[in-house]
Length: 339
Image (cartoon, rainbow, N blue to C red; front, side, top):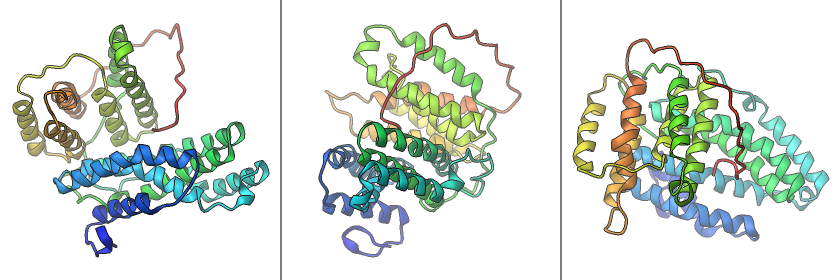
């Protein structure tokens, strides 16, 4: 594998980041899709490189996952011949990709990722696995109702997530500790949804509307993963939703509280890499803080996210969830999938 500047690298994560940095800098394309991909990936790819340089490997991989799918989808799109840009050619290619991805379009079994370590890498793989079908199905709708290039882009995204799942275990060193045994998260997800709905009032519902959308989307993914028995991915997405919950945070002595939480993570008898990811996010947020940019993510992680993580890992029987009343109103949020 090659590192930055083409030099050999023994670090697969550094090599993968360098590969996509080169692609972003040198790829030639035209059209609105490439412009949007460039704008959405440049910052995250730089953040991935910075996180790796600072020893925050889990954060670097998280940032890489978010850009890799878009750049890989673009790479696929720009290799398609002109014959696939009309409706008939697009549908033929979409069908062919369905055959290529056939084994990965079904919901995976809970033990499908048993060999992937550490827990956070397994969580990333589980989350990506459910997106394969979502991207593939979205491709047909986008291709037929907008433009065929969009449909092909989503088909390429499905392939990119399939490829990442196959690679997920190579980027982070495995933990010597056993994976945590996670119970179903439905009670915690229900309680979080209640908290999210309670917080959705002005002015927060107006001023921080994108945070509500992001939290709601992550919660939806967490429910899907939990229902499939993919507990590491469900925990990761649940905590991601909690990080975006728009409530007032306690900003007092965040570094001190994070130090105490780090000690708990280090002393955990199980693989704590999912919790370590959020600790790395908090450390990076503190490092970037300035008078006009408070460390709100770090405060959220210290106040709420890591306490939720430890609660999810708590040993002992869980109380049966209280039946939830039927929904009186159903709200459907439509967004560009998984961005």
